Amino acid sequence: MARKDAREVAMKLLYQKDLSGEADFDSLLRMEPHYSIHEKDREYILSLLNLFESHAQEIDGHIKSFSKGWEFNRIARVDLAILRLALCEILYRPDIPVSVSINEAVELAKKFSSDKSGKFVNGVLGGFIRSKRIASEEQMVPEGQTASEGKITTDKQTASEEKIATEEQIASDEKVKAEEKPQ
Image 1 (cartoon, rainbow, N blue to C red):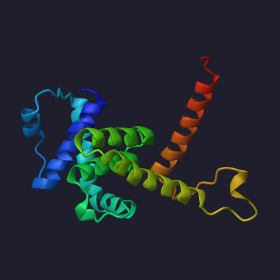
Image 2: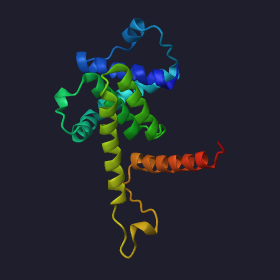
Image 3: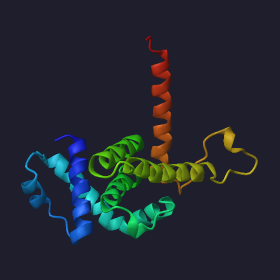
Image 4: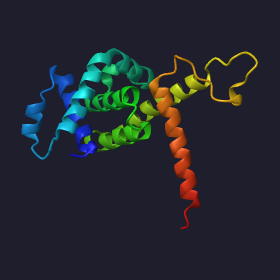
């Protein structure tokens, strides 16, 4: 199974849990036998479910903060499951690039929700990422040094902030390579 399919199963299980209070992995696979789950995929899916369980209040707090103009209880349950999945990846899975988490979330929203859901999901996740970038840029700078004199990090810098910085560098490198490529 590709990671894309594993993400889809994880989203459906988060949705199922939101509606019924529990997520039944085996029954989902019986209802949708086209998914071929390998042990690695199963571990990924269960890891995301456990991460959400452990950090549900924090993740939902971020969704509430960045879903401007929307009451939390009015967000479509499918969109909520997609946002929860993406934020789990962004916050707690540094092995998954932020851009991949966001792109996959938008694709899931387009596939399983309304026409406008892709933009909504992108807006919420984009707002979250922008706030993290601003926060990392506003770190305390040692006396006599400006922020432009080098990267300043603190012990409080989170794995997701480091991941965002890495993503920016990768995107910049890819842009340079694309510009250098003859057309």
